[in-house]
Image (cartoon, rainbow, N blue to C red; front, top):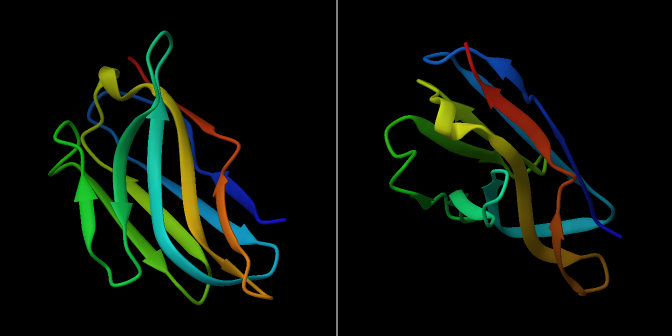
Length: 120
């Protein structure tokens, strides 16, 4: 079973920065797309950013220019650098990965979520 472990959330003032990380374990041999999503209270989960195995990135309009997604395939890790944070960025952030495990089985997994709160 593939597990994704997230870290890096917390409380930050508006204009501040945080860096989230998410590492995969559990017999993963290939990861296709890695991504970050978020869910604010009373709202649906939404895409924040994704990065493909070729390094192609995609961002939601609300974070473009402020957030940067990156990955390390050897470490099976994805990061989300969040700068110039706003109160509306407050949410639980989830990482997501899909790919293949040893033996050829595909997988798609979510992290447990990490809380990001932007408040003065």
